[in-house]
Length: 113
Length: 113
Image 1 (cartoon, helix red, strand yellow):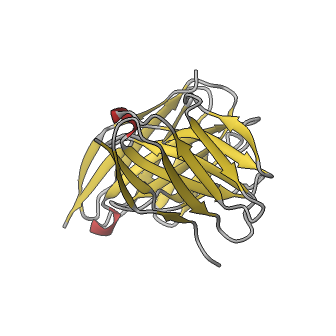
Image 2 (cartoon, rainbow over the protein chains, first blue to last red):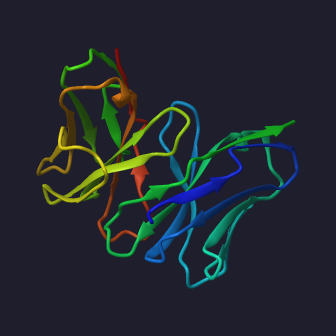
């Protein structure tokens, strides 16, 4: 019940387009949902995060949409740029598990110039 | 403010050997967690240390063990290495009750041959 499922596994978007990555979870005890960006040879870096009491959070070109009833959340990258090309991971954290994160399998995003 | 630093960056070990990986937390962080990231997959939580004690563990066998020191730095020890232990090992630090998620290091790439 700790699984977080992420799709698609890979995504190709034209420069200026919208990149959309989806995640679904099962454990209703999750109360914190971050997205991480990882470049080759680097550790994941926190991009944006949301809690289940809000349905949307926007930071610059990045927006998280959250659907608590469906147990789904998604990352939208507006005006995608070649520099956004990276692997993106959604994650979730239970409310009584300190900082233990359960990660999705990742989405490899390529933004074509 | 320094980030999370890990050493070594790369390591090759033989099956059955033991390995120790090291992590220096970001300044001011009191919690350290370790993750295993197999190639092409999302990170998997190994365990977390707070105040020098393990206070959360994922689905990893006892041959994975750790330490946290008074300066909040940490070690991950893996005994009786198996080929499947080949992965990127990530250290992450935070404040236990942080709302801002982890700061990850760049990881140690372990290859078991």
